[in-house]
Image 1 (spheres, protein in one colour):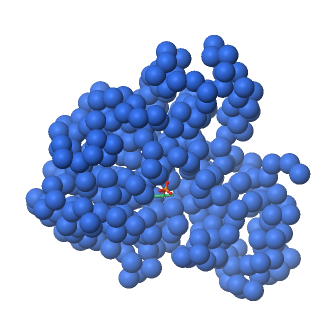
Image 2: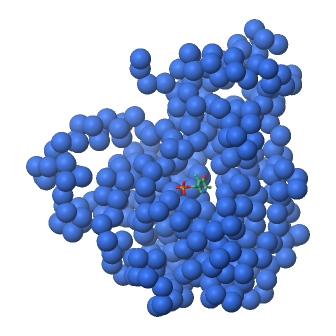
Image 3: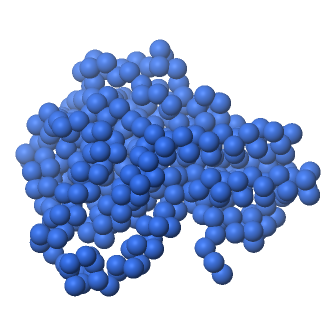
Length: 361
Ligand SMILES: *Cc1c(COP(=O)(O)O)cnc(C)c1O
């Protein structure tokens, strides 16, 4: 059996060129005469990799000089708790906008660390859109405003950066970082688990505006303190060296692909083609998200006849179209279209969906 087209939500598809390179150098990396997994993170060779990966990420995203780049662990979920621990005083309100499952989780993990104020919550409407900015009631003394630019499970995405006034904007970009150009200067903190658009699970990339690091309290364990991680170049303890290495290969691949403008155009095309297939299916397939909030990265869709779900998934898999089952919280199907999912893969999915619709419609 050969590799299929992988539409998994996360851990998700990696660029084949990156996997091939990692395979080719697995035993013997660069000048190391050992695997990248077998060498000290404090040695010269790994230090060079770390520095170069940061340079590449800075160039891809145009990260301003007053932002630190951190390579951390714990998954996005750990940082749901660690962000309020570092950036809010224990008695200081933190504002959250909730547009789906991951926003809910972020709130749940933040509550033990800081009083949470829900600025807007789309839960009652089933998470199918973005609450109009004019309806948000920010707390004047809030520590920050947190939101989830792309809700991976509900397929709801902000296509503009919301206005946060004087509050530092904190964004969980786990499922849309590096998917198109971004104005980093509008944010206080950006963080992302790596397993969707950066590389392998177990690595978290964080961009943090330097002035915010002054808030990190001295009375928390060092290992939770972002200012300590920043001061130590993300080497306060042993980092996820293999994950960092894979991320460095993905950054190089993105640069070779033409950077985020080119990648963003391709992502837009992929999403537009798939939504057009769904909307043009005469009701055989449907996506319930408001058009202006539809995600380019995660496309949930349903079959009008749920009795066909199992056949759809089985036939798709037999055709080499993998991991299309929707999240259990939403049901139906979901196609994730991260950077490593090619236009050709999306075209194959669309051809399959049209054919399945003709045969079962
Ligand atoms: C996948 C995902 C997470 C969870 O990441 P973990 O690494 O499992 O903690 C959080 N937020 C978003 C938006 C995600 O897509």
